[in-house]
Length: 161
Image (cartoon, rainbow, N blue to C red; front, side, top):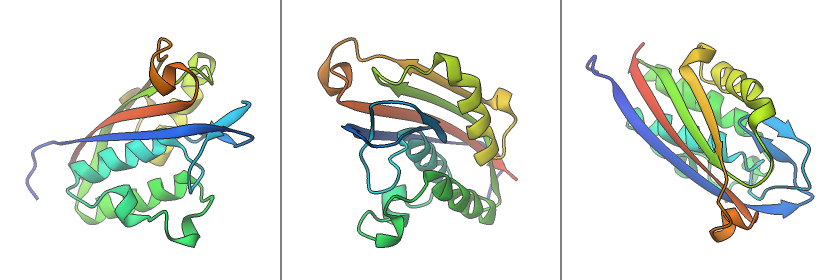
């Protein structure tokens, strides 16, 4: 591996379903609806894993953790983060920073941003000041704006371990 930085982009979208737990960046929110997925549906963690895996030149999350595999049913997305970090370490790399955007009408993120940043920092072995998460609304446009879905976009920067 060379010593140049590597960048990756991850995007994940989940429909929101009544009665589902609402996991965002490894933090559980009290909400009437949560992301629908084979696992816990944490769109931020899924996008973060894809960004990190992409920067490392590895397969994507869906290839590594198939939604057709029963072992991944209702699985905590934090498990995927831990497995991703082992793969990254095996390649002689480490995560240098994460920048995340979550587009959703609900839940509102502002009051819990520091908790989500700390969760991401812990899962990806980073100081908190190298993690950011921003919440955006859908401005009443498309499924996100109508409160039917959420979309996470994450950029990851990796470098040599």
